[in-house]
Amino acid sequence: MKIDFVSDVACPWCAVGLHSLERALANIGDAIEVELHFRPFELNPQMPVEGEDAAEHLARKYALTPEQLQRNREAIKQRGGELGFEFGTRSRIWNTFDAHRLLHWAGLEGRQLELKHALLRSYHGRGENPSSHEVLLQAAQEAGLDADRAREVIESKRYTDDVRADERHWQQLGIQAVPSVIINDRHLIQGGQPPEAFEQALRQIAAAEPN
Image (cartoon, rainbow, N blue to C red; front, side, top):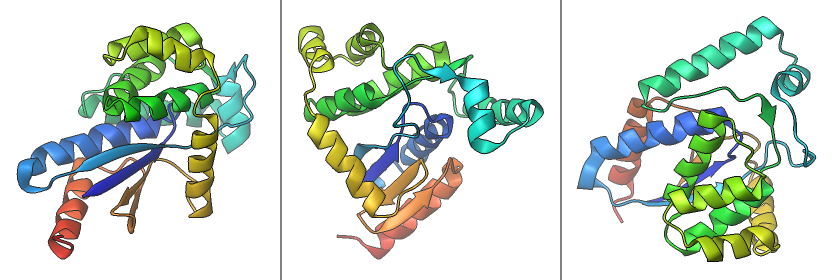
């Protein structure tokens, strides 16, 4: 079973969705053989290098009051805690394109899942800047990637065209929100669904498409 997980490092519900999906896969065990790929999506592709205050950005983008924003953050923190992911304070939102380039390379190295987790912990757990080269390098090392090769990727423009093409591909297929989970190029599951919902969907698809 092929699973494309379209997401952004800056998306808190993507952290929730990934941990929920992984719990579902753990429950399924060896009953379904899975290939998991992380695909790029930028929530804020025009975000400048200096980033933006998170509360101001979210209030403007989604027309949220401070009270609504706080309730949303508490709900996300609770959902993350239930899945074993600890959300910290995220005071700024940053550009994530270089993180997506690094994730593309990590996929070629067979360490994409490990890097995804490291980046989510870095930003959503510790509030670190995912556009910082040093932060990206630290995440690469946490993921078990070669530090010198990671630095070469980070400091170059390598894989820019690949990531841009991948972003356009998913946009052209109608993906406008993340996380979006595409199963076998045909079935779409959106949002930070609970593990039971992912598990039920995966088992149903596997039963209907055994090959």
